[in-house]
Image 1 (spheres, rainbow, N blue to C red):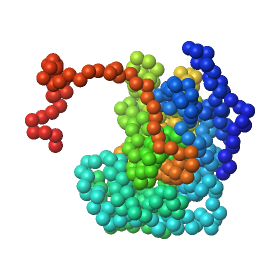
Image 2 (image 1 turned 30 degrees about the horizontal axis):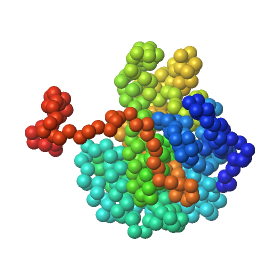
Image 3 (image 1 turned 135 degrees about the vertical axis):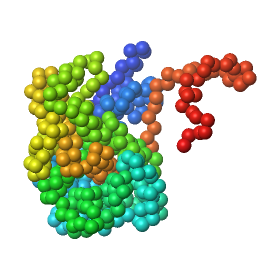
Image 4 (image 1 turned 30 degrees about the vertical axis):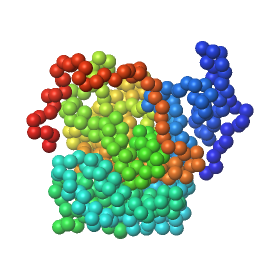
Length: 455
């Protein structure tokens, strides 16, 4: 895809009010969205740094993969609206789109799906790796470890500067993630591992490997398959979020791609990122009854109360999350198909949604239900425990991580990530020998250590 070059006449002038010095910086224009001030050489010319905690006003890279307009509620994958892809496409086609930049022809899609299915099995030696975890381990902890361990199994034939080997690594990680995720869950509940089936689709295989038992036949419900496929599509990419930025930062050092994806999984695990849909279910269980909703609505409005309604509002979207609209429809389809419209917790969620969409406080602040609100409800209805929610998020997001890693490696402007800092520590001090230092008071952290050492 051709990159739009900024007109040479567009510049932005920065003025140092201390000296009156002017610094003429180029403006870089993308195909959509706001322009960016090119400050790559600003420190060397002006001797000052820019300060942007969280990088919310900093473009760390150029990318042609995903575009978000948070004010208008727009999300595009390679230029295609997420609503159209979720309703008309499937996850494998979206994977191809994110990796290659274009929708596949029927022949290209068939070949792509066939190649992905060829890599779904795990190395037999890797199967023993699961047994090193306790049964009580969180599935995400297992995911981080097992995906990182893939680096040891596919190291010699992973030359990241070879386009063909990069794509082979991409296919391997996309194909194996459902297997790893399902096995992580099955290990924690003591069920035997189930091999993937090549006659099943990507979503069908994920359901099959998660819920089937060897002693019985298992046929995935088409409604649930479609719902899970949509969830994977909606979570496939979301621009430069925390986990994607983590993958890019790790990859900028030339690290093994499986290690980079493991770093992304670790970042996604955080409750402020991928753990939000799990937090929604915990909030609903805390509320417990529809009669208590007004009490919690009042608490959410009280700025002095730490309670917050999880699953409402979004850091990026200042209007309705475009993914939430699709998940809301999917939610009702799944509840109808499973006969769960009378489930107390799901009834509570629907009532909370109704009140929030009509309450002036939430409407004025555009605190609409986001994709996490509905995703948690759907996944619970499908039988997934809350500990698996972020695992499913990671499986869907893998193709986005891989697409960004692949784009970054092939970009000639890529440099190893090295953010600067505004230092606020002590100035230069003289070293005092141990015997001349005064004795401090009792250390408050000493109570955390026992005589026998940490187990």
